[in-house]
Length: 400
Image (tube, rainbow, N blue to C red; front, top):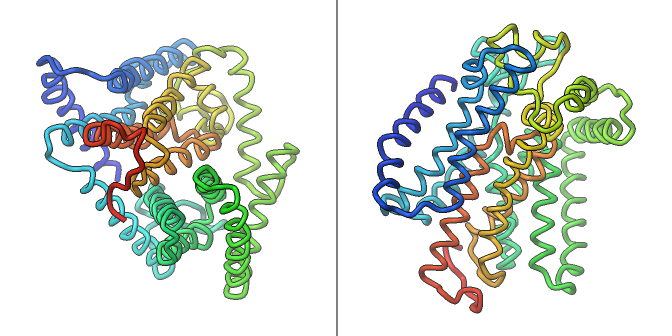
């Protein structure tokens, strides 16, 4: 979807210069969160371009263009103005997210089961990845699948709703059977467990936890009975990942091994430029990192370590501030305020943080994190507007 992405970046830039900036310049108050988004858009890409010029001699323009996807984050500001001007409501956003979760669950499942990915090899690596020897697979983004899982899991827990738990299990089954993303599975389980524990009274959690263990055991046993090879393969992949993580030993898992190699490549550069990093190198300039460093290397493969390699400790903290704003808005809403959309957004942001430790998504897909934090901010503002004393009240808002 490269052309669509490029076109959308163009639309967002036009929006920023022709709509957002004039709107804010006409004496409309700008929030600290908006200042943060604008600062990230203006200064961090410049940092990544300058350091790449210093370290590798890459022209600054190449570095800026390599980070153009950062401007997708302007969509958060567009959402803010659309809600402010009442072109869209948060209820519509919620219904759209739930609809997209189901649409992509059905579509992705059908693709994985009924369509041969080798038919699309010539379409490029953005849709299908792999090789003739290792096999090909679809590259399908599971963000809305994760959202659907969290949405229904939290509704099921809050309302003791068996149907919602069943829906949540459908989204989880997709992740386990068809997606098989290790970090996705672990991150979504940890995010779900954190909030369920946080919202539980001790006695309810102690009664609830064994039920989850039994349910997961039944699901795994059923999956093994239907397709034992998939379950065993997923188990082997988790085993390889833990071996690499804790022992730093090579395994049969190429993906895990590559991360060891890339980490070893990154460490000397991080030690050389710890504060401001080494910058981002465009794959259009001398073949990218592999061309200028002489070794296989993609910073996005090694999560937080890759972020420090590119932007240094300064850049890492600049990007992590998005989670401070998430905590700020979340902490201003009473724990007794029940809202399915709010719960799911909180859960997704925590999932995004945990997942990003391995993948660096909070930098490489900054637009996702900023958009969800903006949703959290807008919900906080709405609750504050209609329920000024919401800290002292127990309320239930939104769709069930």
